[in-house]
Length: 337
Image (cartoon, rainbow, N blue to C red):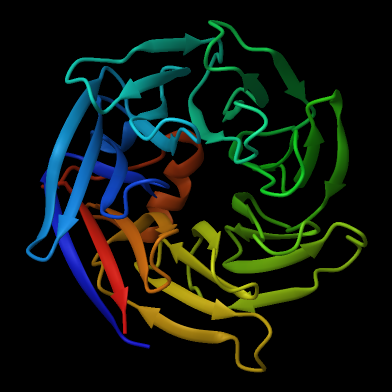
């Protein structure tokens, strides 16, 4: 397949996450920050796409960098972001002002937030650099539960699309962990890499299969029925893998983005699993999503700056060295054909 990209540049912002609306085929939410979240504010961008390209439908400002975004599963206008000040923000795209509500309990940066895909429950889960995971009901002003066990910063939290009340987390402590909201204790601990794990995702077609992406440049698949060895390993990225997503249309297809500027599409069931490498970004690629409406469309975000991938890998955890530059965020939509 080949990919054509639509691009929108947003001066003064660095992209961290991109999420397609599960309701509106042409709508996309992007979480961004100034100065890589080290200082300055954050912006939530709501984008619409048409034949002429991308346009900003609405934007919201927050007083700290925004690192992740997730859409509500029961209201097409509502979404949640998380930020460097330890808070989550609830927004309504039908209203110009916001946020509607702020949830502030984490004591350090919140790097991940996800809204449960199980229709019978309306729950959110957040992961923070304070090494805790918190469970939220958006109608309640405080968290329902706090999960402890990770021994380093938490980079990713993702609900199971199959099992109500079950979610996974990935951490700088090199583990993938599986949790159940019915118990504050961890169900499964997988020593998945010998490096920080920056992302994880659940297969949409197999309740036992997850994938992890790490600083060691590898993607690994894990069958929860036997976690002694990965069921697949995908190699090709040359710097840390920032985000990984399974396809909503194909059981063995997934996509990954990396600090090596690339987006890669894979089919782990093939003898040669790499389907395509897309290098339309010119800087570190941090955000990635696959459209639920179109099997040929994905969204990516890069965070543009001067400096080396090694420097950005260091700053991913502790705000390491970042050179001053003419910085901007670039959002790209990939249409594969």
